[in-house]
Length: 303
Image (cartoon, rainbow, N blue to C red; front, top):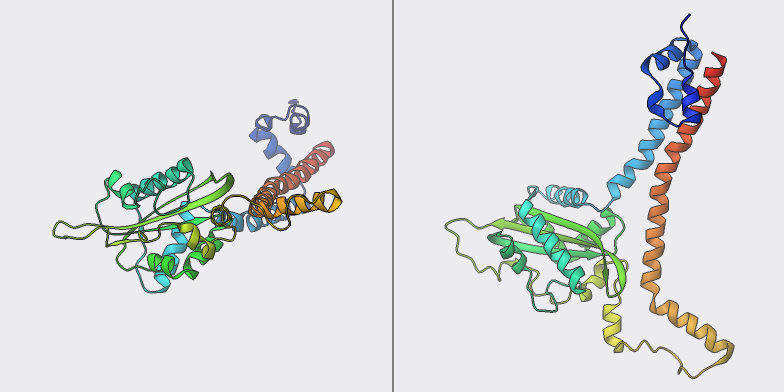
């Protein structure tokens, strides 16, 4: 009689799932009763349903180039405009602009050094007839970000502009003014034709916004404190003079510190919530898997 290897032995001693050979799985399945097979089929179906129910919305909500473009095209098609095709050159334009903002610590259409948005188009060889740029910061889902853009007349105009044919998107986390932020860049364009003579600066939508922090207050749920620092001269002195000591002075310092770093604290809490949610997507399938392994172990012992 052939000596058989119990697959559960490898699961619980060596943790090498690859050691479960096809013949062992087939042997276990063939020796299951009809009721047991049905029970495991129901459990596997339930696991798949729960996994996709939880993981699906998370993947759809993630701020990625694919999701950003999808929402743009859905809005355009709902208004009767054709969808935009993704351009590799515009993706590079968006990435270069994003990298420059992080490197030079600003969030605006025009850099502190005076570099205008169309510089990145020329740098990457995108000869445009029409072009536009949308920026966003500190959003946690693609839906919220797109909704904010659509609620802003200037950004909505870019998204629903009939002159555009292509789009490029870049998304990354970076540090702006000492605060970690999620930054998104949308670049829109339509390439110039051989017979077209255009004023590129005139046809670029967004060049008038020298500092998007001002407009960002309307579109971002957590605006960077650059504007606030500029208004107060960077002193950060709020409320009573700093000469008040004792218990009241101690709590006042704590309150002032929380007030000054409110945006950073909110962002940290938001990012922590996202990481906890993503971790749950990993732990939940493992929990189901552990139950399945335990049942296979029990079944194998009975066999």
